Length: 365
Image (cartoon, rainbow, N blue to C red; front, side, top):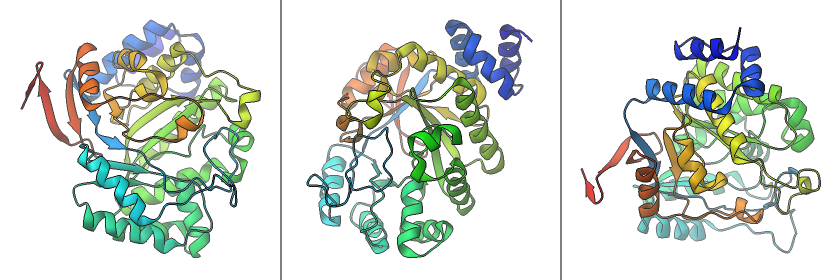
């Protein structure tokens, strides 16, 4: 089967196989991939609307014992730069973001064994009580596993307790490349990739909605990328719990891995992987353009390569900042960027429900 045959098959709604995915990633012309991905995007999300969310991404601690070699953010316990914020300090950050228009707080930290489980429960309860209009989008699978180890609960029990306290969605962080060959090299203390999938499946079964992510551009091969996509697709077939898929490139600054991978992947690689993601993940509703990690212009181009969402405004962000990579934007600029790319901006919430639709230069309906 030729590349064109595979792309035509995908356009007809037929599932691309892992072998065909490797072929597309290795041999397809970028514009051919992009054209097919754009057509498939409109099958999933008809019309010219592109969504975005007003959010912030603070961190409650930078203490972590996992030692991922791609991370510049974490500090070991006892390090002079280590910190853990109090719940009052976090709520102050949340209020400031809410005052700036944020509807969602994407909160993550390190795996810090000195934090008791009640800290997370109390944080959620107070967030829901004191900021009822702010959606808590908290905690990666690695943090859930860490909470289970500290509390003596199973990860399922942790997820149930967190849900009872007010959590209903999880970010997809901690995935990197979901291939054990790669995972054992870049984040071996996280355990095998099946742990990420197990926690996600438990979350979906309990009623959570989550995102799935991919951080590429380090030690993976094309086959590893396809393995990642295939396993996400398989879990989505079982649970339907993923709302979106979000790929971004590794940022090497200040990381141990910088000595091996000194540069991050170029924009063309990003567009290739983004387009393939839209083609391959036929059961995931949304593909997010990462303006933050790839640059605003690349983010705009990504909207023509299969993405239907422009991500968040990220009022605060510290992880990429630690890797010497900084991009910022405002709500007005986000709206302008989406318009300039030829689309209608729509503000959404975490579950992709419409909050506000923008029409024309200054009109909102």
